[in-house]
Length: 182
Image (cartoon, rainbow, N blue to C red; front, side, top):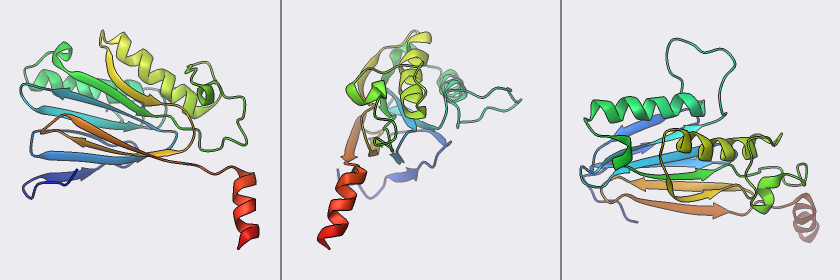
C-alpha cells in the first residue's frame, strides 16, 4: 500500500468529495459516515465522497457533499464531464459504523441488516448508500457497511484498489475493565 512518489494524496474530511485521475490516492476516516467510491477501469479515473447524512430537508442551489443524494449528483456531474457513462464504473461503499454500540444495542446494522428505516444515523447512512446506488441503476461490487466502530479507507485511483482497516470500538464495560487494570 506504499504510495509511489508521483502520486497526489487527497484527505477527505466529512462532507468532502474528490474526483481525480491515476495520479491520485484518496483517503478518509469514517465512523457513522459513509464513503462511496466509483472507478473507471479503462480511463483510470474515479472519485470518493464522504457523506454525513442521507439528505437535507431544504435543498439549496449548490450541491453539498455532506448529503448522500447530493454527493451522488456530484459523481454524476463529474462522470458526464469526463465523457463516460455511470455503468462503466466499479462502485464500492464503506462505513456506517455504529460509534455507540452500548447506546444503540438494538440497531439492525449491528447484526448485518442494513435499513433506511432505522433511527440510528449510521444505519440510515449505510442503507442510503445501497438504495441511492441502486436508484442510479448501479450495482455495488464490494462493500463494508454497518457494524461497530470506525474505518480507515484508502482508494488508489491508479489501480482501483480500496483498502479498509477497521478499528475495534470498545464497549463501556471493556473501557472500564481497561481503566481498572491501570
